[in-house]
Length: 108
Image 1 (tube, rainbow, N blue to C red):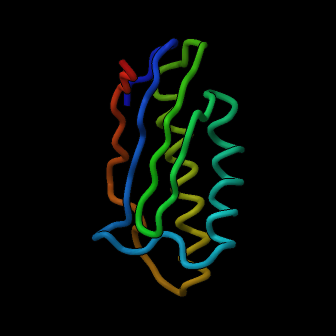
Image 2: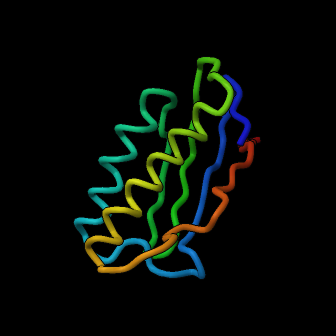
């Protein structure tokens, strides 16, 4: 994922094999708490959409980020959420697809 200052970026991922990511209301709230902790130090969240089996974020940053800084933040976010869901649902393995996608967003 490349992220440059003064750019909007659309970041998204879905459940591995299109499985459910959010099983109950509390899961959405827990995920958003993790998002605030991991992403807000680096970027502004312009918009987001959490669906039962995938998510979308529209992000913006005015500052230059160090290489892979946002990648690492997303990695921590997704792996910590996966661990919590695996415990809750008594499951093992990947919850998300392997690669989180990111595209430069042009609003013009």
